[in-house]
Length: 116
Image (tube, rainbow, N blue to C red):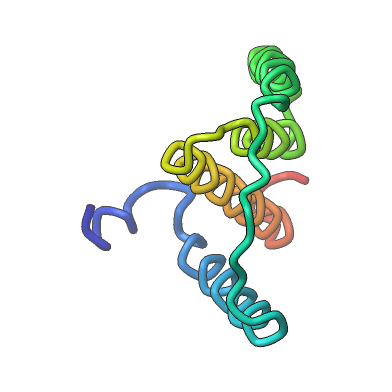
């Protein structure tokens, strides 16, 4: 997808700025802690919690009561329950994308573009 195509997708006008802030935070982290290499901590024991979170989020999405907490928690549990590194990476990208979307929503509300 080209930058022009991305620019025309509603709701993504703030994405670049938020990702710049994420990059700045990563720079601060590396400056403070250095490059980190750690075990993933993935554990299939989180599968039950993941399944419950998915059901809860699905139900709340259907009835219109889902919160960013619900969605972020579900994505987090999907990531930590995944033991395959490539699949975990996909889940972590999804978690990061949801976090960016939540920040964009906070910014839209702060700018008065949508109701809080």
